[in-house]
Image 1 (tube, rainbow, N blue to C red):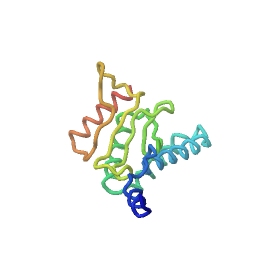
Image 2 (image 1 turned 30 degrees about the vertical axis):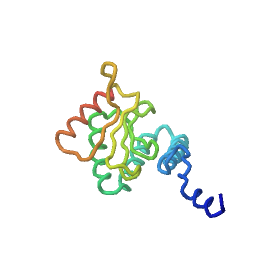
Image 3 (image 1 turned 180 degrees about the horizontal axis):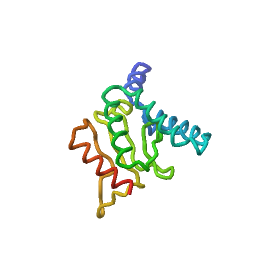
Image 4 (image 1 turned 90 degrees about the horizontal axis):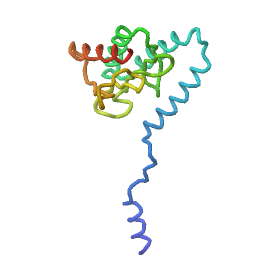
Length: 157
C-alpha cells in the first residue's frame, strides 16, 4: 500500500469509541464535584443548601428544560415533602436519607429529543416482575402533572 493509500485508509477509519460520550464524562465530573461539596457541608444546612443548588441549576437550564424542571420541582416538593432536593450528576434529584429516589435529566445536556424523569431502585414503584423506571418528558399538562404526582408519591413511600 502506498503512503497515499495508507493516509486515505486511516482517515476513513471510524473514530475509536472509548465507552462514554463527552456529555457522560462531564456528568461524572459534576457528580464528583457534587459529592465533594456535599461532604464539606454542615449536616444542619445540607437540605437548604441542596434546595439552593437545585434551584440554581434549574435557573441555568435552557427555557424548554427549565420550564419542565421547575414544574417537576414544584410537583415533587408538594407530593413528597420528605424527599430532599440535591444535585446528582449535575441534575436535579430528590433523595431520602441521602439516597436518590427520583431525578430529572435535561434534554439539552445529554443532547436528546426529550427530558427524562427517572426513578432509582430506592423508589417504591415495584409492580410485579417488571416496571418502568424512566419516563420521557416533553411537556407538563394537567394529565402529565397528575401522573407524575402519583408516581412521586408512590416512589417516596
